[in-house]
Length: 69
Image (cartoon, rainbow, N blue to C red):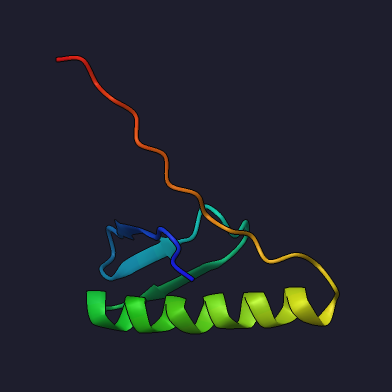
């Protein structure tokens, strides 16, 4: 599965990362590499928990929207 993640630099350094398709799935790290590794672990844990509780796994859908310029 693929999920969009949003990295936000923090004033004190490092990054916070969220997954819009997985509410509450958030992580942080000092470098981009570290934050990507951490969010992959968080996504895995999130999905394992959903499955354990019989909840459906969210699927992110891509939509192309034409923009008239």
